[in-house]
Image (cartoon, rainbow, N blue to C red; front, top):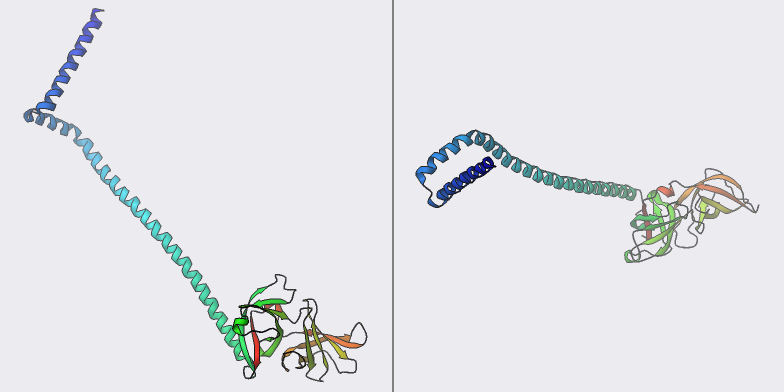
Length: 272
Protein backbone atom coordinates (compact mmCIF):
# COMPACT_ATOMS: atom_id res chain seq x y z
CA UNK A 1 0.00 0.00 0.00
CA UNK A 2 2.83 2.38 0.90
CA UNK A 3 4.64 1.49 -2.34
CA UNK A 4 1.61 2.38 -4.46
CA UNK A 5 1.33 5.68 -2.60
CA UNK A 6 4.99 6.51 -3.27
CA UNK A 7 4.52 5.72 -6.99
CA UNK A 8 1.56 8.08 -7.13
CA UNK A 9 3.61 10.86 -5.49
CA UNK A 10 6.48 10.37 -7.94
CA UNK A 11 4.09 10.63 -10.93
CA UNK A 12 2.53 13.73 -9.46
CA UNK A 13 5.97 15.27 -8.98
CA UNK A 14 7.09 14.69 -12.55
CA UNK A 15 3.78 15.94 -13.94
CA UNK A 16 4.04 19.10 -11.86
CA UNK A 17 7.63 19.63 -12.96
CA UNK A 18 6.75 19.13 -16.63
CA UNK A 19 3.83 21.55 -16.35
CA UNK A 20 6.02 24.19 -14.68
CA UNK A 21 8.68 23.84 -17.37
CA UNK A 22 6.08 24.08 -20.12
CA UNK A 23 4.57 27.18 -18.49
CA UNK A 24 8.00 28.74 -18.26
CA UNK A 25 8.77 28.09 -21.93
CA UNK A 26 5.42 29.41 -23.07
CA UNK A 27 5.27 32.61 -21.05
CA UNK A 28 8.90 33.59 -20.65
CA UNK A 29 10.39 32.12 -23.92
CA UNK A 30 14.01 32.14 -22.78
CA UNK A 31 15.96 32.15 -26.01
CA UNK A 32 19.13 30.85 -24.44
CA UNK A 33 17.26 27.82 -23.16
CA UNK A 34 15.23 27.13 -26.32
CA UNK A 35 18.15 27.24 -28.68
CA UNK A 36 19.73 24.04 -27.41
CA UNK A 37 16.33 22.35 -27.38
CA UNK A 38 15.68 23.50 -30.95
CA UNK A 39 19.08 22.22 -31.96
CA UNK A 40 18.40 18.85 -30.39
CA UNK A 41 15.00 18.63 -32.07
CA UNK A 42 16.46 19.52 -35.47
CA UNK A 43 19.16 16.92 -35.02
CA UNK A 44 16.64 14.28 -34.10
CA UNK A 45 14.18 15.21 -36.86
CA UNK A 46 16.74 15.72 -39.65
CA UNK A 47 16.65 12.12 -40.98
CA UNK A 48 12.87 12.21 -40.93
CA UNK A 49 12.86 15.59 -42.71
CA UNK A 50 15.21 14.23 -45.39
CA UNK A 51 12.61 11.53 -46.16
CA UNK A 52 9.47 13.59 -45.74
CA UNK A 53 10.55 16.68 -47.73
CA UNK A 54 11.05 14.85 -51.08
CA UNK A 55 7.85 12.91 -50.48
CA UNK A 56 5.95 16.15 -49.89
CA UNK A 57 7.52 17.60 -53.03
CA UNK A 58 6.55 14.53 -55.03
CA UNK A 59 3.04 14.65 -53.61
CA UNK A 60 2.75 18.27 -54.71
CA UNK A 61 4.08 17.34 -58.14
CA UNK A 62 1.68 14.39 -58.21
CA UNK A 63 -1.21 16.77 -57.59
CA UNK A 64 -0.10 18.91 -60.50
CA UNK A 65 0.41 15.80 -62.62
CA UNK A 66 -3.08 14.53 -61.85
CA UNK A 67 -4.48 17.97 -62.64
CA UNK A 68 -2.66 17.96 -65.99
CA UNK A 69 -4.09 14.49 -66.72
CA UNK A 70 -7.59 15.83 -66.04
CA UNK A 71 -6.97 18.80 -68.36
CA UNK A 72 -5.54 16.49 -71.02
CA UNK A 73 -8.55 14.18 -70.74
CA UNK A 74 -10.92 17.12 -71.18
CA UNK A 75 -8.98 18.37 -74.21
CA UNK A 76 -9.02 14.88 -75.72
CA UNK A 77 -12.78 14.67 -75.22
CA UNK A 78 -13.22 18.04 -76.92
CA UNK A 79 -10.97 16.94 -79.78
CA UNK A 80 -12.97 13.72 -80.14
CA UNK A 81 -16.21 15.73 -80.32
CA UNK A 82 -14.67 17.98 -82.97
CA UNK A 83 -13.45 14.91 -84.88
CA UNK A 84 -16.92 13.37 -84.92
CA UNK A 85 -18.43 16.67 -86.01
CA UNK A 86 -15.89 16.94 -88.85
CA UNK A 87 -16.60 13.35 -89.93
CA UNK A 88 -20.33 14.05 -90.01
CA UNK A 89 -19.79 17.28 -91.94
CA UNK A 90 -17.44 15.55 -94.36
CA UNK A 91 -19.98 12.77 -94.94
CA UNK A 92 -22.71 15.35 -95.55
CA UNK A 93 -20.56 17.32 -98.00
CA UNK A 94 -19.46 14.12 -99.78
CA UNK A 95 -23.10 13.09 -100.17
CA UNK A 96 -24.00 16.54 -101.49
CA UNK A 97 -21.17 16.39 -104.02
CA UNK A 98 -22.26 12.94 -105.21
CA UNK A 99 -25.88 14.05 -105.45
CA UNK A 100 -24.87 17.17 -107.37
CA UNK A 101 -22.81 15.07 -109.78
CA UNK A 102 -25.69 12.62 -110.22
CA UNK A 103 -28.16 15.44 -110.89
CA UNK A 104 -25.72 17.05 -113.34
CA UNK A 105 -25.22 13.77 -115.23
CA UNK A 106 -28.97 13.27 -115.34
CA UNK A 107 -29.48 16.82 -116.58
CA UNK A 108 -26.98 16.21 -119.36
CA UNK A 109 -29.15 13.32 -120.56
CA UNK A 110 -32.49 15.08 -120.20
CA UNK A 111 -34.44 16.62 -123.09
CA UNK A 112 -33.98 20.13 -121.69
CA UNK A 113 -34.38 21.64 -125.12
CA UNK A 114 -37.98 20.37 -125.16
CA UNK A 115 -39.18 20.85 -121.59
CA UNK A 116 -39.10 23.21 -118.66
CA UNK A 117 -37.86 20.88 -115.92
CA UNK A 118 -37.73 21.08 -112.14
CA UNK A 119 -35.22 18.83 -110.36
CA UNK A 120 -36.60 17.20 -107.20
CA UNK A 121 -35.45 14.70 -104.60
CA UNK A 122 -37.48 11.81 -103.23
CA UNK A 123 -37.96 12.38 -99.50
CA UNK A 124 -40.43 9.61 -98.70
CA UNK A 125 -41.74 6.29 -99.89
CA UNK A 126 -43.53 3.31 -98.41
CA UNK A 127 -41.19 0.78 -96.85
CA UNK A 128 -42.44 -2.09 -99.01
CA UNK A 129 -42.41 0.09 -102.15
CA UNK A 130 -45.62 -1.58 -103.38
CA UNK A 131 -48.01 1.36 -103.22
CA UNK A 132 -46.44 3.10 -106.20
CA UNK A 133 -46.40 6.49 -104.43
CA UNK A 134 -43.33 8.56 -103.52
CA UNK A 135 -42.97 12.01 -101.98
CA UNK A 136 -40.75 14.72 -103.48
CA UNK A 137 -39.33 17.87 -101.91
CA UNK A 138 -41.17 20.46 -104.05
CA UNK A 139 -44.75 21.66 -104.08
CA UNK A 140 -47.05 24.47 -105.13
CA UNK A 141 -44.56 27.07 -103.84
CA UNK A 142 -42.16 25.74 -106.50
CA UNK A 143 -44.69 25.78 -109.32
CA UNK A 144 -45.59 22.07 -109.12
CA UNK A 145 -49.13 21.19 -110.18
CA UNK A 146 -51.27 18.06 -110.15
CA UNK A 147 -51.04 16.01 -113.34
CA UNK A 148 -47.55 17.11 -114.34
CA UNK A 149 -45.54 14.21 -115.81
CA UNK A 150 -42.39 13.09 -114.01
CA UNK A 151 -39.32 11.73 -115.79
CA UNK A 152 -35.73 10.66 -115.14
CA UNK A 153 -32.65 10.82 -117.31
CA UNK A 154 -32.94 10.23 -121.05
CA UNK A 155 -36.59 11.27 -120.93
CA UNK A 156 -37.90 8.11 -119.26
CA UNK A 157 -41.44 8.57 -117.93
CA UNK A 158 -41.83 7.19 -114.39
CA UNK A 159 -45.10 8.75 -113.23
CA UNK A 160 -47.11 11.90 -112.68
CA UNK A 161 -47.81 14.34 -109.85
CA UNK A 162 -50.86 13.10 -107.96
CA UNK A 163 -51.10 15.42 -104.93
CA UNK A 164 -49.55 18.81 -104.23
CA UNK A 165 -48.83 20.54 -100.93
CA UNK A 166 -46.98 23.81 -100.33
CA UNK A 167 -43.47 22.37 -100.18
CA UNK A 168 -43.88 18.73 -101.14
CA UNK A 169 -45.84 16.57 -103.55
CA UNK A 170 -46.90 12.96 -104.06
CA UNK A 171 -45.87 11.28 -107.31
CA UNK A 172 -47.82 8.30 -108.62
CA UNK A 173 -45.35 5.88 -110.19
CA UNK A 174 -46.40 3.96 -113.32
CA UNK A 175 -46.78 0.70 -111.37
CA UNK A 176 -49.50 2.22 -109.15
CA UNK A 177 -52.89 0.47 -109.76
CA UNK A 178 -54.52 3.85 -110.54
CA UNK A 179 -51.85 4.91 -113.03
CA UNK A 180 -53.05 5.04 -116.64
CA UNK A 181 -51.08 6.47 -119.60
CA UNK A 182 -51.71 6.25 -123.33
CA UNK A 183 -48.85 4.60 -125.22
CA UNK A 184 -47.74 3.56 -128.67
CA UNK A 185 -45.05 1.24 -129.99
CA UNK A 186 -42.28 2.84 -132.03
CA UNK A 187 -41.96 -0.08 -134.47
CA UNK A 188 -45.57 -0.59 -135.59
CA UNK A 189 -47.49 2.28 -133.94
CA UNK A 190 -49.65 -0.22 -132.04
CA UNK A 191 -51.64 1.91 -129.62
CA UNK A 192 -52.58 0.77 -126.15
CA UNK A 193 -52.91 1.74 -122.50
CA UNK A 194 -50.07 1.60 -119.95
CA UNK A 195 -51.41 0.76 -116.50
CA UNK A 196 -49.98 -0.25 -113.15
CA UNK A 197 -50.44 -3.68 -111.67
CA UNK A 198 -50.79 -3.20 -107.90
CA UNK A 199 -47.23 -1.93 -107.50
CA UNK A 200 -45.84 -5.16 -108.95
CA UNK A 201 -45.28 -4.12 -112.56
CA UNK A 202 -46.62 -2.33 -115.62
CA UNK A 203 -48.95 -3.79 -118.25
CA UNK A 204 -49.48 -2.69 -121.86
CA UNK A 205 -53.08 -3.54 -122.65
CA UNK A 206 -56.14 -2.65 -124.72
CA UNK A 207 -54.17 -3.34 -127.89
CA UNK A 208 -56.27 -4.39 -130.89
CA UNK A 209 -55.85 -8.03 -131.95
CA UNK A 210 -54.97 -7.04 -135.49
CA UNK A 211 -52.15 -4.75 -134.31
CA UNK A 212 -48.58 -5.99 -134.69
CA UNK A 213 -47.16 -6.56 -131.25
CA UNK A 214 -44.08 -8.58 -130.32
CA UNK A 215 -41.55 -9.01 -127.53
CA UNK A 216 -38.85 -6.36 -127.54
CA UNK A 217 -41.00 -3.58 -129.00
CA UNK A 218 -40.41 -0.17 -127.46
CA UNK A 219 -43.35 1.71 -125.95
CA UNK A 220 -43.44 5.51 -125.66
CA UNK A 221 -46.14 7.98 -124.68
CA UNK A 222 -48.61 8.77 -127.43
CA UNK A 223 -49.41 12.29 -126.20
CA UNK A 224 -53.15 11.59 -126.16
CA UNK A 225 -55.07 12.86 -123.15
CA UNK A 226 -53.76 14.55 -120.03
CA UNK A 227 -50.61 16.65 -119.78
CA UNK A 228 -48.11 13.96 -120.80
CA UNK A 229 -46.27 14.88 -124.02
CA UNK A 230 -45.59 12.30 -126.72
CA UNK A 231 -42.35 10.46 -127.20
CA UNK A 232 -41.37 9.82 -123.58
CA UNK A 233 -39.84 6.38 -123.14
CA UNK A 234 -41.81 3.93 -121.01
CA UNK A 235 -40.13 0.56 -121.63
CA UNK A 236 -39.97 -2.55 -123.80
CA UNK A 237 -42.54 -5.33 -124.23
CA UNK A 238 -42.28 -8.87 -122.93
CA UNK A 239 -44.67 -11.87 -122.84
CA UNK A 240 -47.10 -10.71 -125.52
CA UNK A 241 -50.40 -12.61 -125.24
CA UNK A 242 -54.16 -12.30 -125.40
CA UNK A 243 -55.83 -10.56 -122.49
CA UNK A 244 -58.08 -12.63 -120.20
CA UNK A 245 -61.15 -11.24 -122.00
CA UNK A 246 -59.74 -12.59 -125.32
CA UNK A 247 -60.66 -9.28 -126.99
CA UNK A 248 -57.33 -7.46 -126.85
CA UNK A 249 -53.64 -8.16 -126.77
CA UNK A 250 -51.50 -7.31 -123.76
CA UNK A 251 -47.87 -7.54 -122.67
CA UNK A 252 -45.66 -6.84 -119.72
CA UNK A 253 -43.60 -3.65 -119.90
CA UNK A 254 -40.00 -3.82 -118.75
CA UNK A 255 -39.01 -0.28 -117.66
CA UNK A 256 -35.42 0.86 -118.35
CA UNK A 257 -35.02 1.99 -114.72
CA UNK A 258 -35.76 0.43 -111.35
CA UNK A 259 -38.62 2.27 -109.71
CA UNK A 260 -37.43 1.07 -106.29
CA UNK A 261 -34.03 2.73 -106.76
CA UNK A 262 -35.23 6.17 -107.87
CA UNK A 263 -33.67 9.07 -105.96
CA UNK A 264 -34.06 12.15 -108.14
CA UNK A 265 -37.07 12.98 -110.29
CA UNK A 266 -37.63 15.75 -112.83
CA UNK A 267 -41.05 17.29 -113.14
CA UNK A 268 -42.08 18.55 -116.57
CA UNK A 269 -43.62 21.94 -115.81
CA UNK A 270 -44.14 22.83 -119.47
CA UNK A 271 -42.78 22.60 -123.00
CA UNK A 272 -40.36 25.03 -124.60
